[in-house]
Amino acid sequence: MTLVVVAATILLGIAAKATGSGLACEANWPQCDAGPFNLFPANLPSFYEWFHRFVAMFAGFAIIGSAVAAVRLPNVDRRVAALVVAGMLLTPVQVALGRETVTQYTMDILALHFWTAVLIFVLFTVATVLVWAPQLTSAHVTTALAFGTIVLPFHVALSPLVIGDITNYSASMQMAQYGVTLGLLGSVIVATMVGRRRFESNRLTGLLSATTVLAVFVIFLGRRAIMTFNPALDSLYVAVAALLFVTFVIGIRQVRHAPHRSSDTRQ
Image 1 (tube, rainbow, N blue to C red):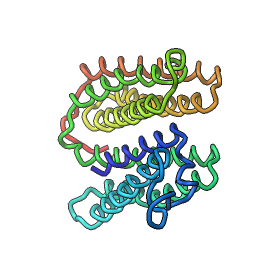
Image 2 (image 1 turned 90 degrees about the vertical axis):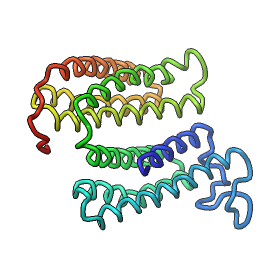
Image 3 (image 1 turned 180 degrees about the horizontal axis):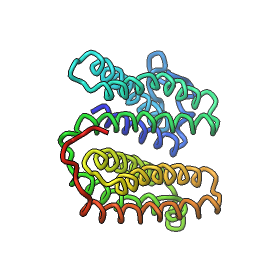
């Protein structure tokens, strides 16, 4: 549940930025621009920013609650506890960066705000996979790789590089692309973690690790290309995305023939 709320917060943040609502609420933080004590939005742009903050507040409570529960419950894997506690420690940093996007709104602060949110998402994704690891099989590796193969072309198609020749890179398009971004990131994390647990082939596990590295590069280059509109970055983005697609396909083929571990020895 916490992972879902974190993902929703990221996408709502993208919506606020894409609609130019980041400086709505009359640039007040944490207040807005209407109602008692200026706690509520006065117009639609302010609503986007206000609703993003509202969901982010619940995400913060969920993160803190998950961390406290993970530490207090004796049957929780210590690795899971460490991951969610790290997410909790990053939360006040993310809140402070959110405030700075309103009071200063520089590109560097905006980038830090985004990547900190992505890091929290990754921490909770890894923790979730660890929790479900005993139930995840080699079939889930294939499914994760297949999912990555399907969504990766959408990541490119929804970028300004392609969609800009068809229609505007609107707020809905940006939310869709970043939704694909989170799905892509989740798929490579699942494939890599479960693959390392279920297969003995060093070649396969190395290939799965490569998908994670390449996916991070695709996401980074895709975002840089959006922010800078640099033709060189556009070309590099497409090239790395194509390499990742090929890696996904090879990974699916290798999963079918790779030897399984005789036991679930943890890596």
